[in-house]
View 1 (tube, rainbow, N blue to C red):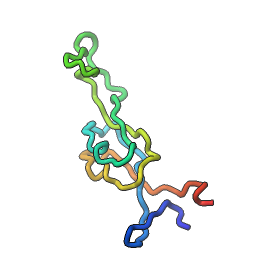
View 2: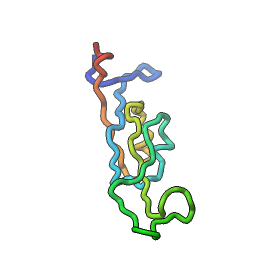
View 3: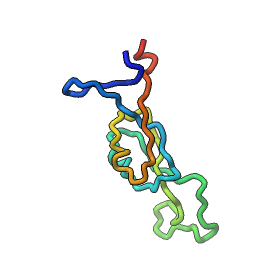
Length: 111
């Protein structure tokens, strides 16, 4: 048995999927392309941590969308265990924010 999770194509060829394991939020621009291309529930949009907007009334949002104009939104990994290893997210990411890697068989499947 292979050390990593493997799959078989419809044509019978064996392949090793690479699953999303990290998202570099510092590089992410929050474009949402990874979210839109993902067939699973792997990503979510969050407020970038560590970014501070302007203080006082300058932060008030005039569009009433719930976010101050200076709020920076980025993607985050919501459920990386739901990743199927298709790499669609990385193919559309303009900033190369995502890291993928093969994963070992779960202990229960290897037994």
